Image (cartoon, rainbow, N blue to C red; front, side, top):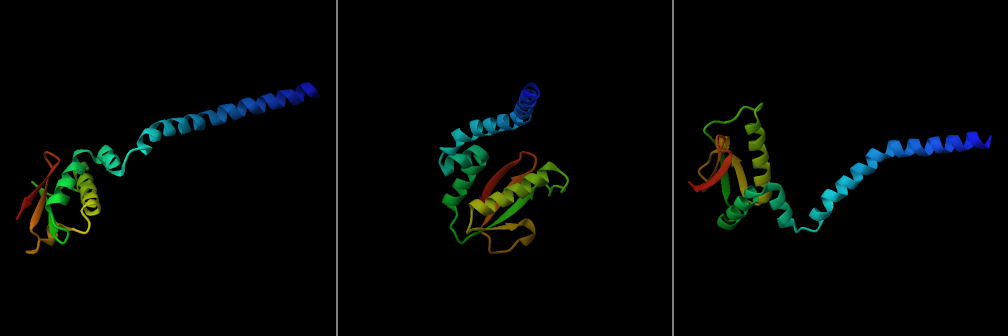
Length: 133
């Protein structure tokens, strides 16, 4: 009876190790990735995620007053919603709205005489450019 009980306990321990090993490995990989990032400042984290885009936004924040409106225009043409360019454009509009708040980002369709700046997104080069109207 004792041998059967030991066998069942050993089987259960081996089963637990095999089942939880991928979970433990995933937790280790997550902590290995997150620990160096955790100690970074917020600006360093933004640079890590957005890179040159964040530097461009910092330049825009420095040069545009808080009560201004900015028109977001896509050149040479508006991308179709099924393309990666459309996803990138929507991502950029969302991030710009977040970083440039309280400045207002207007879409190309909302062209009004009030906006002093135009932000151009070139779909061919996948770059942003800020210009005065």
